Amino acid sequence: MESIQVANLVKRFDDVAAVDDVTFAVQEGEFFGFLGPNGAGKSTTINVLCTLLLPTSGQARVNGYDVVSQPDLVRRSIGLVFQDPTLDDRLTAMENLEFHARIYNVPRALWRERSEQLLQLVELWDRRDDLIRTFSGGMRRRLEVARALLHHPAVLFLDEPTIGLDPQTRDTIWSYLLQLHAQERITLFLTTHYMEETERCDRIAIIDHGRIVALDSPERLKTQIGGDVITIQTPDPTSAAANLRARFSLSGEIHGNTLRVAVVEGEHLVPRIVLGLGVPIEAISLHRPTLDDVFLKLTGKAIRDEGVSGMDAVRARIHVGARGR
Image (tube, rainbow, N blue to C red; front, side):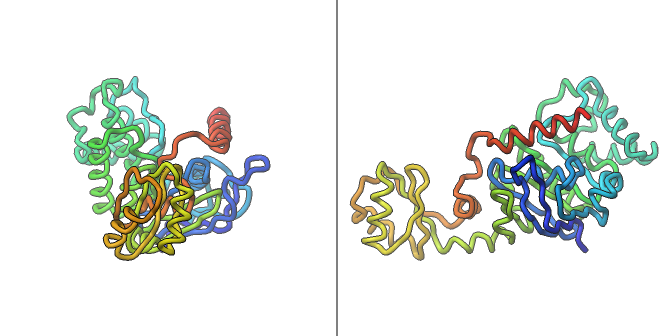
């Protein structure tokens, strides 16, 4: 059974197509990753699926409900952890959960039982009566995850859930999420800038310029690269690429001062390149293909490229405007 169905989805902001004829489906209980560089359309897509934005055209259904004609039913069946903090820091942890439960009409006896279960799981039960303003960033994020699950959603949307957290706290958050996923078999829909987090996904969709350019399991996506990846840092990558073609019959991809080339049995080739490339080499490394390599090949950008695109700014203005209405 499919938890999410998207068909020919389009979302335009004036003359710019942030989402351009996107089609995909997410199976019930699946852990689905949704990746893309800044401005690729991933946040716009998740906002449409969560009924925060109306699509320009196409269809999207979540848990069998249409996001346009049945938005209230969609909202009741999903949980959402935003990028930005959304807790009321003037309330306690339990008061934040109670407020959420009342919005979703969760009976008092049920939400109190559910709150204890979730707070025990994320190790915040002993802090249930403390004000949120006394919580660390990691504690707040753990509480937001618990709150999103309070009303038993069928799908949990995680929009950059660990952004800004230190590595240890990120690992802690993920241990809770994976435990919840195993216990409750809910569908997880993730966007993230941390590529290692997507290794946990059953499948990953990569979106670029509003279109999905790849959709498969992490392992199958990595097979697109080839056997090994050699990375060469040089002050003259253009000459290095030309020499690589002429002397070794290999085609490399230039990214700044770095040249990347996919090869078979790279350990035998590295010494030959060092001796025969004909340009200065500052560093050279060999590794098996990673999702970073897949992302770079498909989008031409690294997942951690900094900077906010024009489309990000447009979406931000639209989102703020929507919240104000």
